[in-house]
Image (cartoon, protein in one colour):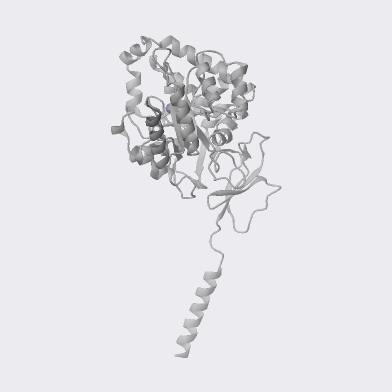
Length: 426
Ligand SMILES: [Zn+2]
């Protein structure tokens, strides 16, 4: 009996001691990478980033940061660490065509996973978003291991002819807790009437009454100026009808409004007149939708694109967009990377890297491009927890096998992608 008691006591003691041992550490340290934190400063060549509960708790040089006891070490020497890319203008949920019948939670999930595999860890869907998006949006700022890109939405794009009608639409979006409001003000190369000022002014006022930013699709310089005078909050495409001027630059700066070029959107309007070069890029092929690629390689379809009435005009539009991006970036206007991907033929994930390439073609430096695709894309849309790798931000990042400051195309050399401090499966 005694012996039995002693044995039981010893067992309980051992059990108690075992319970007192430190558990597996909750802190992960990414050690040794070149850190480009998204703020545009000089990279830290030998860095430590400490992550706890999905957030960055410290980031800096190995000389400055002490590793806590029992930390989980991830050796990232030889890699470059950048914040996860933030796409300030995309769309999700559709396949084949933008039609409510094709919109589903399964599509959204698959597409957000696709973005994530390409290192795009935050996606702002600027319109055509239906109810199924809300469950995804609801956990944006949590540290759940979501394994996909975070999703912000603009809900239904506001259209209408009466002030009461458009106000009711804004109210409905606000009730559904959309993150932004989106409008289109475009006369389609003077072939139709653009949304009249009294209507968009009412939409802007109603959005602001709900404390929502108003994002606008535009094409023309004059319309962009009129919208800026009316307190628009975000220019969601390039100005493509003519060169931007000092007046526009001043308006963007004094109103503190960002400019989102979506160059790949314009590329997609004519690129499929032939088989584009990027169809041979292994980084593209890896995740491409074979059916969509096959359809775009079809010679009859390609001839149709070449014979389209705007085939040349679309190429000129991209050339103008490149000129304007360089001019605005040089003038100090804040640029937010966006692609308008997710509309069929605009390949989610790949187009973001193609966008970075086009931004380089416009003449932006790799560092400026990275800042536009991380910190500024987030700040422009007031996304508080993403965009940089510093204390207090969500641990969304990409480890690259090569330095994107040497060549922006090195953003394609992805070693791993992490969202909320968790490595996603490639
Ligand atoms: Zn769009």
